[in-house]
Image 1 (tube, one colour):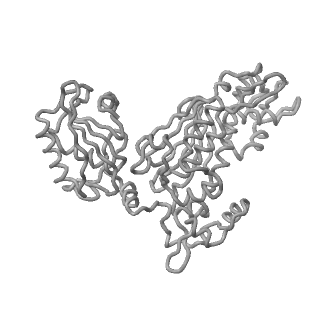
Image 2 (image 1 turned 90 degrees about the horizontal axis):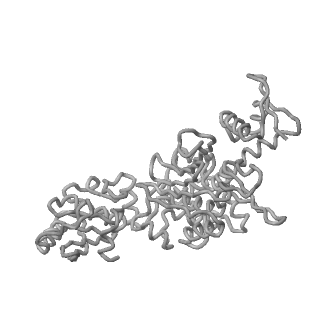
Image 3 (image 1 turned 180 degrees about the vertical axis):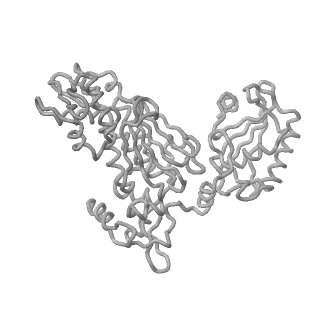
Length: 458
């Protein structure tokens, strides 16, 4: 990109501005963070307010900067340092490529001197990020690591056999080893981290990979002040695909478009795009980050899928959008591909955007937020400005289900309704839904206290 264009962009994961080189240490940390993370460009001679101030004695400054980088960063790194003149001002342009290192500040050493780029800031690498950097050097992924203290009996191999058998694929121990589900250690097979995440028994997963889980919540309104419904997936990430999509279906609305005598149901969010984005999150989450897990949040005005882990080192959001493929979890990705849940590598973003465009949905927004990646989906205009003449499109699927429990003229107490839906929602959620159905004119209540019953308006 031309320097003139870069000057008008905000600072980012791959772009930073400095006024001068009077303080070299912050500049060195930026060079280290760029090299460790995804590369980047540092422009010296632009103030934080956006004005060009230029670099005095630019050739001397270039030499001082090059010497400082050479003397203070280990292993040795050689960024491109160029001189550019814009609007009569001399600037230093430092272009740093991503390299497998990790690089660190010499006087601080490892691990204290290792910096990574999170958003617009340089941060000391956490133990998890440092381990990821070191695995990158060795061309290994976290989920390939063998769990030498765990028996292969910790895996539900019968579940794996069933999944592969349904596709008429072989499911022998050798096949599981070739996929990376099992690892050979000292003439025996043990689970890999990825194998345990995919097929591990619940109690073993909870012990060894406690953050390889998915939680969902339906919030009341557009913030997280009140929860209407929630789900913590008990099974593996393979089980999560179906369970999460069912949760979304029962907590979102359905509109209908009627043309002539034909009716077309329109989900609030594109099922194809959601499934693809969910699979993308499951495959690319950083399961090594402690205290973080995949979260799906449904609000009145949006749906968010958030997974732990920034983009892999050497990879950016622009690379992702361009279809460049970089796999974080090789075992998990291989199994999802084998199960036909993933198609061409690097095509997920394109398929998600196409599904939204073809279905008439707003384009989703992708963000890298520190050590998280979030994709936000927005509702179909048809579910907010309904095509129906009735108000049924205002109902969530769960509300429709509750209405279906009432037979003509039948009254039901809250406890009777709750017995039929308690496996999926709380009593508080049910009471809220009943109040909403009353407000919308679908139900009326009679009596008070324990004698209170509900009646559907026909």
